[in-house]
Length: 502
Ligand SMILES: Cc1cc2nc3c(=O)[nH]c(=O)nc-3n(C[C@H](O)[C@H](O)[C@H](O)COP(=O)(O)OP(=O)(O)OC[C@H]3O[C@@H](n4cnc5c(N)ncnc54)[C@H](O)[C@@H]3O)c2cc1C
Ligand code: SF4
Image (cartoon, rainbow, N blue to C red; front, side, top):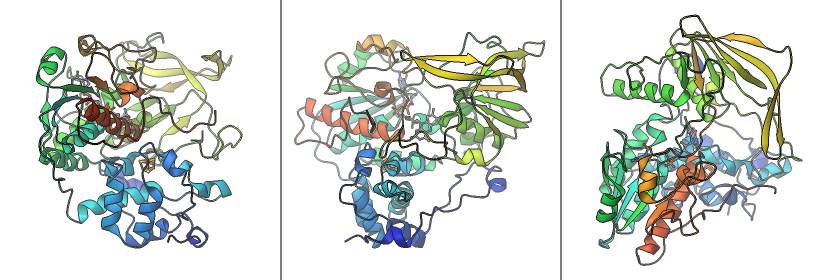
């Protein structure tokens, strides 16, 4: 029986992050473990409210009150089992999820701080490793059916694991040289050290999943090849088409890049260093892209922008500005606009924001300014207002508000426009919708018979928790399509949306 008064005895507390001056000297994760005493205290704040809205906040339907109570009472093995019943990769979500479950925690209704659900989750995930490693699950007798998964991000990997554990032969095709999707070369090590991915991949391999890296499906192998070799195909190719701003004067100047170019180059340098190989941060054509000694301007206000900020500081930037089109959000939930338990529009500060840089709100870039040699030297911005009219965004510059910010390196982190146009789409008979995503029918099929879609490729750029949930649900649909025995868990359907007030 959970402690109904724990939240009255204990305030919400999180472990202190590593000190800024120390952590920006390396690429290691910024958060230390909480320790047994603190995490058991924090799990005690879960009051067993009876109708746990956190379940609906979490797309995976994680059994949060169950494992909170198991942690409170020291039942770590049972907590590990309970968490893995709904989440293939809690070490990813426990580190990286923005935790919509916490926004939906019932404690938030009475003006209390929510339970530290995400921190409890990561402690359980790490306890799984500490208490004997991620042992492969025994797999049943082979069904004789085979599935190709295209893309090795969290959606593809979750689906692959579910299908392998149901006895199907699964091959994951990845065009990159390493597995993990955005977790590998998009998200920096200071948020997710890559050993977590490698440990999971070893578990998947031991459960029978086969991996083929360096294979660009649609180019190196065709859809026809894959369909001849496999009984079903899951497309989990992500939403990697970066939004650009071609109409802004000066966009073609040297030093103005997509944020992902910067992140991928930096991640590759860290990966090479881990293997004892020296490397420089460069674009695929060899052009250097590094913030060392530079004035960096990051355009955008989301995860990608914050990751660029953390990378720029670790590379030794001279200064960083982060520009956001929208006004500074409030510190607390505006209940009229975003009532509990929905996800509120509030100012979110990532660990990278503690490390320095200046955030500038309600501004838009008017021009990337040339230094006379074709290299950017500044960004000319104006203060703006943003309105939605008939669903369209109208940005109006305030007269006389223009000014320049020095810039040697400009990074565009202004979002993604869906999955990339690539030969694979036509070959599998799937099309991008108006948002650049690929629609799925209720059974997750997307094109020709036996072709399924999941993750960001279906949902548009989203979150890891949604990618895992969709991967699990698509695996359940594929299992049914292949005539598998019983059913696999399907936490979401293709139409499922985050909790909303209307
Ligand atoms: C910089 C950045 C930071 C982020 N930070 C967070 C965070 O902190 N928390 C969070 O929850 N979410 C975060 N996200 C979002 C999260 O990473 C994505 O929602 C998630 O990775 C989507 O998973 P996915 O499996 O659908 O696709 P992806 O992870 O994008 O994987 C798709 C894979 O498909 C491969 N592929 C594509 N086409 C082919 C082909 N033709 N043949 C073979 N392989 C192919 C790609 O190479 C890629 O590896 C972040 C995103 C970015 C860009
Ligand atoms: S995956 Fe995200 S939403 Fe679900 S319990 Fe973990 S932190 Fe909360």
